[in-house]
Length: 269
Length: 269
DNA sequence: TAGTGGTCTAGACCACTCC
DNA sequence: GAGTGGTCTAGACCACTAA
Image (cartoon, each protein chain N blue to C red):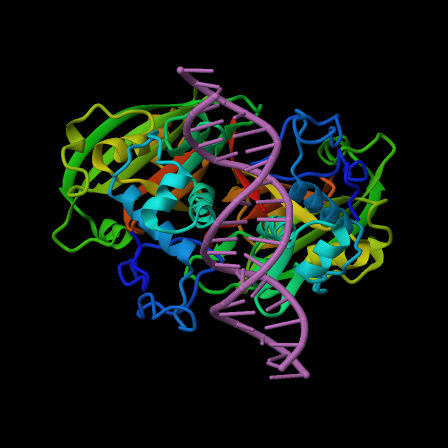
């Protein structure tokens, strides 16, 4: 139930990329209309629902209460709830299906797999990815890892090395580093093809965005061996930081990709 | 003014990436509610406004009529117009500024320059791009160009070769092919740094999206010479098709980029 | 102060899915 | 038929900009 002064609403909660983003940050809900730190009601509803998602109140694939139920519970109009739900849907955190309901987005379904995998076969095949883990270790975080994942000096990480194939073409060798404290026991698990669904279902960590930096490099000796290609071959290096719902960097992934038969697809809008 | 049967509305007009996209295509406005080819009113308003943009009824940077004026003119509610304007804004075709008005998006302003330029300096500098044209010719379209730009066998193209620097670092050599009939006289112009604003203002062609395919390649002799780097150096090849408001491919651009001091930034959501 | 976009509401009705 | 999301409307009020 929303307090009419909105003091009960989170003021500095996790926020995401929205145009209506206002300035005032430290000044809470600010008495309301007229305040410089104005924060629209639907934005506050967005943050409350986002928090529930971050707290794993609803599991991936699960149906949310209907718009009307949420509106009644929160004491706002259905239109306001709708606007918040639409924003969460635009951020790929929810999926809405007319006549059925609103569901927590799932990293497992066919279209979501390609949300974070931009490598495509040149011949426009479907190209489902497969993976083979070549090693897992837990170790003290390196300086690079601490910098990328925003870790303290004593932090530990789990490093996963694996090779991947796209459409049956072996083309990626990568090293994945995650903070050990966020993913306890991950080194002992059978790792699925899509790590992000494991993060969500087993550890309650939902990947919201990822920033990738691409460079062309010469294939190193280690990757050359793993990918069965000559060292020195031009390869695409993808350096990814994955960010979760609470805006924390939770994974660093360095991939080296051969692009003889695949390419990286980027759609600009 | 909208006819109440909506027969006056374009049925098969240019459309873009919207979730509410329906199936029925050939069946016009379909008697209305109940029809399987249901097409929401705001979607029809979207298409009408999109057509005006494609027809250059309003110039880049120009202010549109207010929501109320458009609603009155089209005979729909202000909320419906708003929904269409919001969708056009999400598609980067309009810019809305509270208290000022709604404007046609401009490829010239500071943030729009980077909408289609994903190369960034490694040190997070601002990195405004500069360009130097090394050659322009008009010629018969090659088989590749005809395929990429969807041209007939007798079509002609204009080819622009240039090198670019990002943040004063020379790193890109590219060839740009455009259909000669769409851009008459372009070979004789002084070309600006941002070609897409020229396309819009002089030729009424607005680039709406672009598809880029990235690969790692070895630097060829010609590019090595232009970029003053050793042949064989790993380089990022960006193969771009730019699409205009009418969903036509109107430019093919093949760029070769040295990535020693810059990277390609891709944000996944 | 006038004009613009932005928010919020309440209600009616439509389209879709599933029982 | 019941329940869900999707559309459309009308109106009130707020926030922002510029004159």
